Image (cartoon, rainbow, N blue to C red; front, side):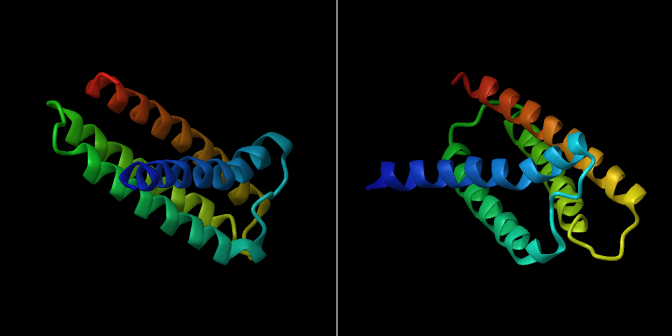
Length: 127
């Protein structure tokens, strides 16, 4: 049963991140505000889902973490909070197109940094 929960949390983490960031990334390339203002509750739910699954995954991996792992996890966590903020701002109705473009690009760059930090965390664990 434990492997089911592990796989579920991993799937929730990755799938929700793909769905949420996909709107921001797609919008940055298409020049469209893909994250609709009506999706504010869905964005908030996605942020909660990623946070819960990420904390669960962290707790599973923290026991045998190598040196430097905690620091890089903190960096990844702070970058993820930045991405969450940018995506949440994209749901505002009274923002100018210039601001939306900056927020989308910031979410795109932040997402790339989160993925790089996650890959480095996996490298540190030797997996």
